Image (cartoon, rainbow, N blue to C red; front, side, top):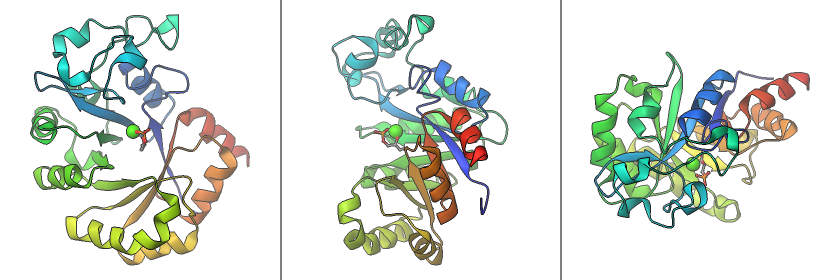
Length: 247
Ligand code: G3P
Ligand code: CA
């Protein structure tokens, strides 16, 4: 291995525990993930909650949008039993509840899903917590939202998400220029991208990092580490680290 790589637990340790819950986040820390990634949306009453989909159906069984229910209504729902009976009574957590779990020195990647009014609420939640801003990593596919968040929270590193490997070679120069102009620290791309040392070097020359999601194959993870990526997001951080060590 050329250099240490940061392993990021995707939606927490989400292979084993229900994604975007305190259980999956805590399991990520317990499995010694260097960072945990969560997704956030806004409730009807302006609270930032950790959930991937814009609707509650898949992970709680309630057929409603996150932004049409209040936090109190969402808190009544079970966000764990869909995964396993062992996780019955897990709730959709607020960002504040997730931030309260972050151990000293570790990072939390917060993926901003598009929502009107998300950034001011995000800033309030982050500033009310005690996690150092440098340990809170902002990521988003939404360029406008990420730019707004970076302006509101300039000390938080920000990475622009990209999942379009087919158009990557044409778009890369534009993306590099955009990251530089907005003060982002780099790109966080799908593992489907053609990632090699040359790509990492091209970004380094622009003073940008390359992060990658979502990788559960130890050989692919090893290739990415050898290419020099800064972090790998995975659904099973403990297992992946152990398997990578065997290679
Ligand atoms: O870490 C980025 C990755 O989580 C983006 O994809 O769909 O899992 O939010 P998604
Ligand atoms: Ca995500």
